[in-house]
Amino acid sequence: MAGRPKIYDDEKALDSAIEVFWKKGYENASAGDLLKAMGIGKGSFYLAYKGGKPELFEKSVRRVVDHHLQGFWDILENCPDPVQAIKDFFFLLIDSSSPVGQRGCFFGNAVLQIEDKSLKKMAASQLQLIGKAFTDALKRAKKTGTLTSDQSPEVLGLYLLNLWNGIHLTKMVEKDTAKLREMLKMNLSLLNSKVKI
Image (cartoon, rainbow, N blue to C red; front, side):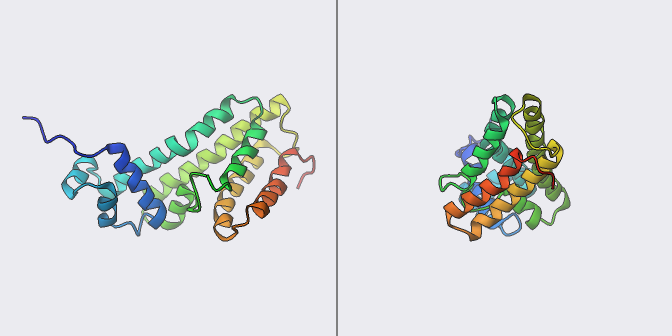
């Protein structure tokens, strides 16, 4: 005997849950908040997410990577000038049309907010992957000559990860895009600087 057919869209429901996590944080997102946003009942929820809220968050992390970051990582791996691609990416982050908006980094928020050690570690690992993507792209740029900085790609990758975390926080308090753009230009100029710090 077949079970009852689903009456909701898995991806839409997951995207709605992501919005709740992004807005309220993992700890503050109640079961009621999530069920209401997802448009499903408790029975359907636990049928789809047998591990409950932690499993929902794990799937949310993978979906955020697929929808907001994977395209950029693909560009970094294949573009002729990774340095310019990185600069363009950071300037996009302060644009009002940025999909991240003013909510901060999904993973950075989670690292700060989540108490569950395994979920915190999962979010932190995504930040490490962001740093690795920067580092790998800069190694390639060093070989092709588009990276002229005397700093090592590893240090610059960590620097960019720090900038990634910082810009998400700074743009929550500074709304002047022109100022943010100048600040980014100053920070990103290190990629072309010959001066060791």
